[in-house]
Each structure stands twice: as C-alpha cells, then as structure tokens.
Length: 145
Image 1 (cartoon, rainbow, N blue to C red):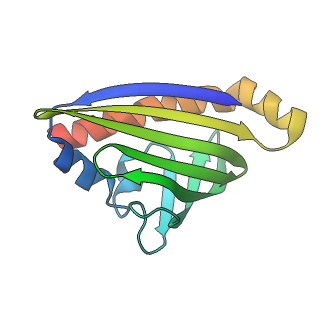
Image 2 (image 1 turned 180 degrees about the horizontal axis):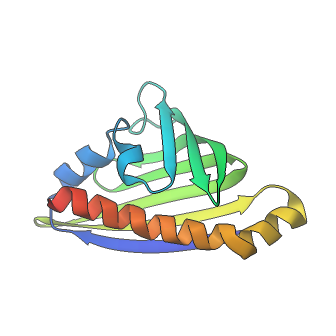
C-alpha cells in the first residue's frame, strides 16, 4: 500500500470549512484531478452513503466508488475507495479558534498486481502526492478568499 500524508492550516472557523467540504456540488472545483462526483443521498456526512467519482491522472480517467466509513462532524471523515484504486481517504479536522487544521492521509493500492505496483511507483504516486497537495492548497485559497 502507498500512503500519502499532507496537512494544511486554514484561516477560517471549522464550521465554515466543514460546510464547504461537505458540499459535493463544488468538490470537483477544489479537489485536484477530480472530474466528476455523483453522490447518493446523505453524502458525505452519513456513514454508508456513497459517491461515484472520476479522477483524471496521467492522461487516464479512472472511476472509483467512495463510501463514507466514518463521519464525525468538524472532526473526521473517512472514505473507503474501491475501483482501479482501492484504499482509504482520511480527513482529520482540528479546530483552533478561528483557524482549522486539516490532515489528509490517503492509503491506497492500485489493482493489477505487479503491473499496478509498477504503475504506482513510476507515476501514479507522484501524481497523487501532487494532487493531494494541490487539493489542500485549493481548499485553503477558496476558504480564505
């Protein structure tokens, strides 16, 4: 499994940050590489709710299914990913007055056995790392504007 960890501090209160992150209609606008997000009712706040996403990376578009595995308002969101890439996407949210700290950990594996592992090491891991960093920067920039 590959693990990518990134953090950001946003100069906005946690309620504002959480409300922004919980709007699936705008997620593709700030989540780097995400082309589309089609949510079920209750996504992303209700455990068991799902979404189908399309991610573009390295010239390829991959579909993935997300399921909310854990949800604690203004503290935690954990999504299970299944598709070409399987794993978890963990968002830890820590309020600190009018500032919000977010830690993102993506723990994934590309399906396809040895070929998937080679693809990951050759280019997918770098793209995912770059996209995670850009997503947090986009989130920060949108909320601090």
